[in-house]
Image 1 (cartoon, helix red, strand yellow):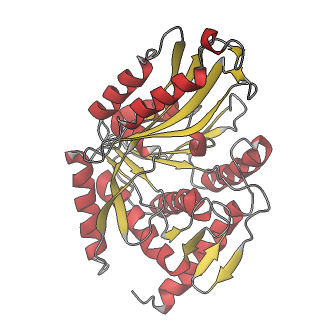
Image 2 (cartoon, rainbow, N blue to C red; image 1 turned 135 degrees about the vertical axis):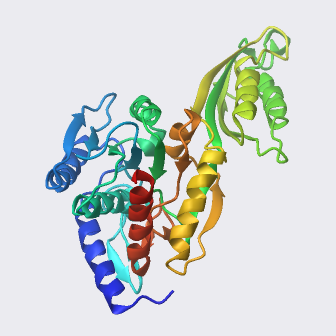
Amino acid sequence: MMPNQTQSTEAESLLAGLRRWVEIETPTGDVDNMARLLDVVATDFVQLGASLERIPGTDGMGDHLLVRLPWGRGPGILSVSHLDTVCPPGSVAMRRDGDRFHGPGIADMKAGGFLAFKAAQHIAGLVHQPHLPLTLLYTSDEEIGSPTSRRIIERLARESRYALIAEPARKDEVITFRRGRAKYRLDVEGREAHAGSAHASGRSAISELARQVVQLDKLTDYSTGTTVNVGEVGGGTARNVVAGRAFCTIDVRFSSAEAGRLVDETILSTGPIGSDVTVTASGEIEKPCLERTAGGLELFSLAKSIAREQDIDLVETSSGGGSDGNFTSAVGTPTLDGLGAIGNEWHSPNEYVVVSALPRRAELLRRMITALGS
């Protein structure tokens, strides 16, 4: 889709505004820089007459910013955007490469958060605002699983009629499904003994761990979308000592709430296979599924019709990675994800947004909010 002169001017204006947010690098846990960025975001929203609540960070994380726009009543529309990024400060050079602009966290997902602000700014300037209220939450810990913002997100989602998540997209698409994610650790305790003179007296924790890993591998089922990956292993003290301790960490992805529940119960109830050893399992479901529901598909249908008016064939897609949309969907709120900027290579030094696509993605999000609110 070739942009016209008006769209090109708008694209450059959107990029200039977005750069103000991107230039403040905010890797997860950088409390000071997150505070600086939230000051900028808050100043932008104050001009719209929004009410702001700064939610203090906990457990070493930065603050979160809750924004409520001054229109509408009852359960409304929730937008959740994370402002934390992945790459270490200074490792991603901000630069222009034709239609691509690179920057730390620019696609994932500062651009989405900025486009949500621009949607609110546009609506605030209308003669008649939507009947449904608009609430926006900017968080500081999504890249590590949203441990300090999850409960806030779930509470706000229960109070809302719809959730729109502006995570990035790779093309003209939106996301209606995301797999769930869980993380676990197995700790095995055996009995140390000299590997030469008393081998029979020992009980190898490493050998037990090897048996457990074989069983864990059997939980992977590609036909149902369940994958179980042992990512780290460790244990023992010396080559000539029967290992008294061993551990492994486990990443699980699943495609339905039931599949997640089953694998969660299976891993947490893990018992020893060998004799005279103990096995302790710990962990939890970190993110439930963003399931492909009727409510989510209705939102996709609306988005597709809006895009069609722009001569865009918007497509529905899925993702193996999680987002805060997993939480809003899991509490029963119809959710549409992937409404942010078009780009790619997130979490890398080459992360970028497509500059010319910014106006049409801004219009899609803005018109979704106005259509749902009206």
